[in-house]
Length: 122
Image 1 (cartoon, rainbow, N blue to C red):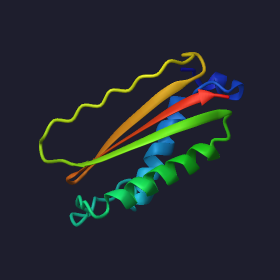
Image 2: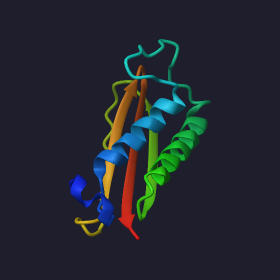
Image 3: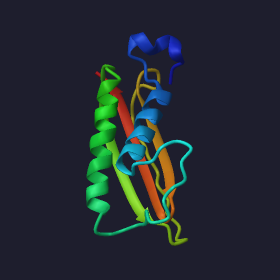
Image 4: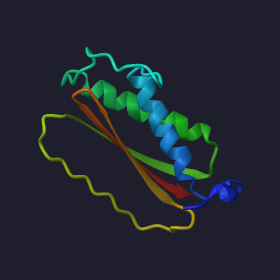
């Protein structure tokens, strides 16, 4: 992964990808920085498919706004936090100088969200 000096060369910038993920989560769940999370925002199996689709859509749109020469693969996991264990492992074979993986986990009340982005330079 590169520092900001490589941004114009198409090198992978993990911080920008992490922000794209975070902005997507905030948009879907209508969260604003510094605000308290509404206690009524709880896991609902009826909403999981809609939330997942929206999270993928917002994240992909935010990534395309970065205007970087990458192809992205985005995955989304939503589960109810009921103190059960959950392990996620990611792996890929790519050029570590230009490509990268970014994964973010967010807990909102009893909702656990894990979004992962694989970015491959075109």
